[in-house]
Length: 442
Image 1 (cartoon, rainbow, N blue to C red):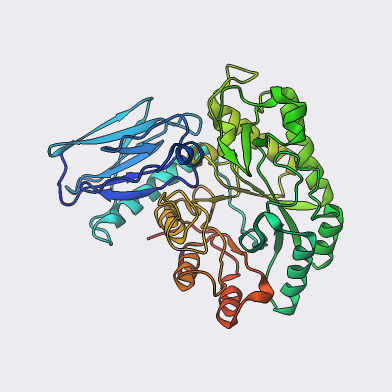
Image 2 (image 1 turned 180 degrees about the vertical axis):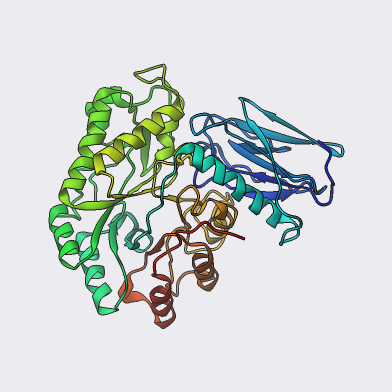
């Protein structure tokens, strides 16, 4: 395909929530993982993208800069996600896909903003409209506002911390619909119904949340098991053979094989029990693990198909009225299966990723993906840019608040509320409002 060297743009779509996703000029060098650990946990584990060519997971778009429209190369469905390569060869780009890919030329209505990049936004939005219909995306529900424990307390959160912030919401007149307990309540990764010593009773804290007129939410990483967990110790056959999610929580990790009848039953038990306790907002995280290649009990099921089956099991267990937020999720295989989706890496209290990898927590990485996946808002799901963190310790907090204000479909606060200064409290009040439902239009 002939291109205009100075005006052509290439859009790389990453595999999962945290994978860098953005558009490049032909002279740009695409971002790649800084280490093997980052590649496995934050990119597509089974693939190695070349350093000297552009590479999209299930989606790559090319504006040749010649005014003929945008060429979109994409997955044929949510169940097949080809890796797509675009390599520059003189004044031409050669595009190849490892599996069947659909090639569509989309008219994006002339020149765009940001030195031509807006053309890609409009083309991707039009492509997404059609993909969403094929995937069976229904009417999107208005997202609730939420408070999340993670970005102040991290894994050390206690039941007392949840209770303190629950009281502070009333004291500070904050419009919080959902109080979401994040990582740290469980005894071990995978032992979701066994509490850490920092929590006395989930029914008790859910009762307090509901008595305060709010909804209860909880975080689960359903497709991961830690080597210290009772579930992996007692059921090693529930792990996907040969799959290596790497390390985390200071231990080796294993991926849950949802094609194993016992593992599926456990998944139903966990989420059904949490629903019965009174949770009706579920953030499921690190769910890329469910799609990893490996030896499954049912060898005829692909990683993507197993992943989608696992999400359906979770949805059935929590019921149709519960709100389901995906994170660390393979993007295209998730379309039609969740209410909201994290579309970038975690926000950080710092601007740059600490190890330089743009799949890692940082304002720079979160803002980049938020901007370049904005077209998914209101088409695939409600976009979750990640939480507002507005304390004075947050580097360039004003910039992040602007990102949340402009792009945030799901609005969540994650500070210790009584610790906010005047600017942080005013900004939290202002931005904790009903989020976006309508499709984002640039």
